Image (cartoon, rainbow, N blue to C red):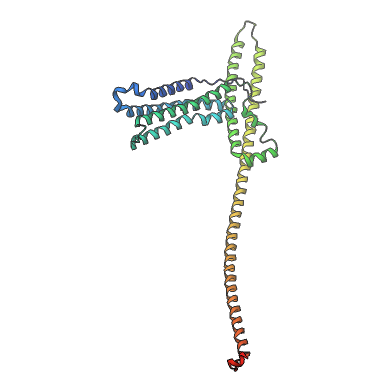
Length: 333
């Protein structure tokens, strides 16, 4: 039996809307700065930096609230939504931190160009911050709306049947997605624990109701129905306990298989390093022998040239050239 999922609670977007309103006010302040602070223009950069620091502080507080909501979604068993939202809720604080760093650089280095003043640069940074954080919050609101409109089982239950039942599936997962498998199994364990706690509270409540009805003597007590419901809940609790124990054993098996795979990869890596070292050594030996062969070829060429010169000298000595004794007149006749 799969864990219960009919008690899923919707996630509120009140904090997100409040933060978006705060960002809108921040953007309006950046746009209206020349008119709002026209009488204290020398203090405008300091005021804008103070507002940005306040926004950074409030963004950190709102981020903690959103992270708490994402953890609640994860405990509800919707792993894929929690994974997507986990990264989105941290982006506004990152954008605000980067904007604060940019404003700090502008103030420290007095980046005043011929076209834009320091106050104008600060206002541009503030507008970019507000637009970026607002876009991320819009994506978050869209995901939360999809989550609140879901009418299906938690997606974390898929890992209860598919990953570790067949060896072929396990082989593919352990070589390609081992870390994600462990994370999904841990999320499923947390979801099972939440369901166990809920069922324990439900059983206690039903036991109290049953004891109250048993003490009554009006003859209208549905004791049989309550006993049947209590037995059903108790059966669900035992089933969940068994599934949790099985899931823990399968998780240990998956981790052992992943450890074996890591050991094998390490062994292959070490063997590959040995082959690389041996290859380098052989290349060095080959280079040395190539150099020696080149030296021998040059020596052989020199020896051949010397032999040719020596042969020419021997031929010259054996056949001296004939010297002519005739006069030039006779030669002309």
